[in-house]
Amino acid sequence: MTFQRASGILLHPTCLPSPFGIGDLGQSAYEFIDFLDRSGQTLWQILPLGPTGYEHSPYIMNFSTFAGNPLLISLDQLAEQGLLNADELTPLPPSEDVTPNRVNFDRVIPHKTEFLQRAFDRFRESLSGNPNPAFESFCQETSAWLDDYALFMALLEAHDGLPWNKWDSAIARREPEAMKAKSEELSDRILYHKFLQFKFFEQWRNLRRYANDKGISIIGDISIYVCHNSSDVWAQPNIFQLDPETLESAYIAGVPPDYFSETGQLWGNPVYDWDELKRTGFAWWIERFKATLAYADLVRIDHFRGFEAYWRVPAGEETAMNGEWIKAPGEEFFEAIRSGLGSLPVLAEDLGIITPEVEELRDRFEFPGMKILQFAFSDDDTNAYLPHNFVENCLVYTGTHDNDTTVGWWQKVGEQEKQNVAKYLGYSHPDEVKEINWEFIDLALKSVANQAIIPLQDLLGLDNKGRMNDPSINAGNWRWRYESSDQLTSEISDRLLHLTKQYNR
Image (cartoon, rainbow, N blue to C red; front, side, top):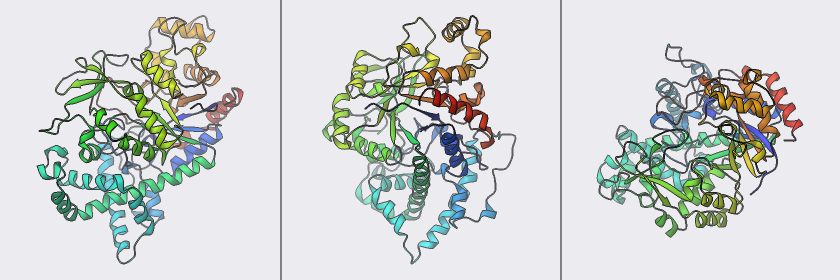
């Protein structure tokens, strides 16, 4: 599927400013959409929205691929609905461990959870003799995943976070009598988690409508893999390659050595049993796409090449080096998705080790691939990431959430690459390049790529301190956020609007 010429900004909602230590779906999100509108942008790309676990990666450690992250719920909006008192809402207290442009999850989670619990208590009281039709409708419409998710989260709490395969065997293996008993025992906590999902999707639906009304489309994100300790794997272990005795992952997903890591990336996720998925007509994946398209207009598929062949590493390996490529039924898979959903508004993250077979799969379904300008200047003029080598049906970034900011990259990149950049931009020496972030923004916007996406950090001209994720390290990622909506200045929006109009985006 090809797309119209357009441009937009990459920003995850956790990166929005908020007095509660983490971005949410409240006022600053609406102000960001207003900034997109003033700047002439028609795309807002986000990362996966699921509830995060270890190290808070939205890609690797989600408790569900269908659920929303309760930490993104706006407390102010709950107060407007009478579920909280505005005068009881206290900002996250200042601390030496808290900086305005970093999310401190260890402090944010207990602080925000206290208010979410209070809101739930009041919501539960309101249900006494007075059913909530909107809540009941939501629970019914999402029951295919919500029932398992809410019970899973209640059980996870009851077991102090112990992975599901370490629970009592009867509940780990989902024996009906054990499931029924636990559902009754934990009914209040199950209701709590359903309430959080109800409020998350209510707030997100309103925000998305606000964006759509301004002509702005949301680019959602599907991470190819899910976390082992998730409701997804607990509910359907048969579609994953697990050890039948321990229910641990028999193999771990990742990628071999690449641009980001000399030893590869070992992600820790279980890999799929594609034969079982094919036997079911890829039903689970079809439901996953449906759920994503219920909150997004377009879908970026992370690690697209894994649908053609995936890197499988035996469990217990310390790096991803000792893995092997295993063929995946990509063509049958996307035919089934298309048959179930119709046209596919899909963008393919086709980075990494890309073979002719991966390109053929991408092009068969006309999925736009990705071009990264930071990758363009390491060799000669045949580099596929140089703008003069683009095809129209692609999506260009200055950098992605996995890259350094453009300013940070420029400060560290080698002299030869700097010289290549300067020459390409028409300068005789790298010292003549004064605003590398805006130079790259200009390159992206004027390219033939149908879509161009700019990380907000590049618009703000931030250095390495604005980096969202470094795939070569596990700890400390996914925490950056901007401090105030005042940073979204008219100077930036006017400059971006000018370029957007100039290059017909």
